[in-house]
Picture 1 (cartoon, rainbow, N blue to C red):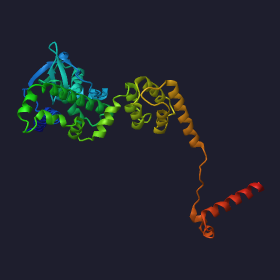
Picture 2 (picture 1 turned 90 degrees about the horizontal axis):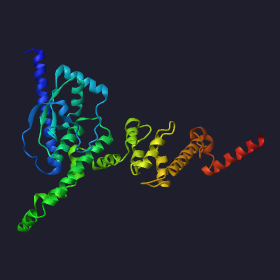
Picture 3 (picture 1 turned 30 degrees about the horizontal axis):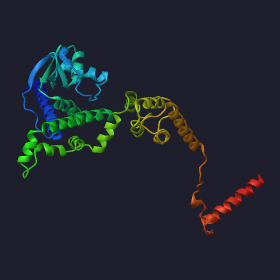
Picture 4 (picture 1 turned 120 degrees about the horizontal axis):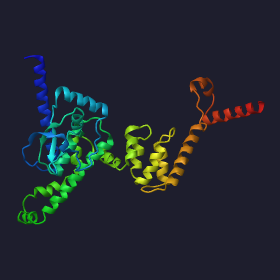
Length: 346
């Protein structure tokens, strides 16, 4: 078989594997997080017009699009080799389709001048749609920022909590009757499912800790301007400071945005902790915050210019003389007397 055909066949096999992997991964995530099987429905393969596709709007999952240069490279690849992995969509209103997976592929296809794009159309409720839209990105995109991950985790947890409330409502009649009939038997699946901690389930599936999820979700409380500084200019705003800023309301965070934008005065944890002590969250007046910021900054500058509190010497150089004295206090007294005498001479 010619090498070109062999490479083409291998690419198609890899694409088929990745296509199956995207839905398989999301279905596995759905089953672990929601503790129920994915509704069985056959996916439909179709070439959909690009003008009938809308971005994912069911929840704020936070993923940023690829930068322009990467989208251009992807568009060139589409023109040369075609699309290896179909996008995943679900039917929306007015004969439109909501993109669940493949937003960057859609943008690249438009750049490449395509009119249609190969798609896999699935029937999915909001919970499954959120899982499909988040799971493969969380696993495959290694360069995601902590804020992007936080928004994805939050969308999953919100969906899990809504699903739990819905199931609790559905239990009220039929399940209560069943529990009374099976009082001496096993508890129902729905009851056991409610015991699972949603955050723990998400953490286990994606191989992270619950602490990492809590931290990432907290940072989603940052206003967009602060989130941009954290992601684009980490030297001006580190994670420790951003975590403390997230406790404040949006108006107070706007003041932090201004502080972080002042050249030559990067925010650090000591300054931030001083502001928190002087102006506790969640709400703080802008003038008081700036006063506390200046106090902390001035104190830091004084510490840098202040003389050292202790004087250190290389003990080895003085060893022949120091051994003649009994204690450090005696040496200190002798050295002080020597300096006093030198001061008189000068």
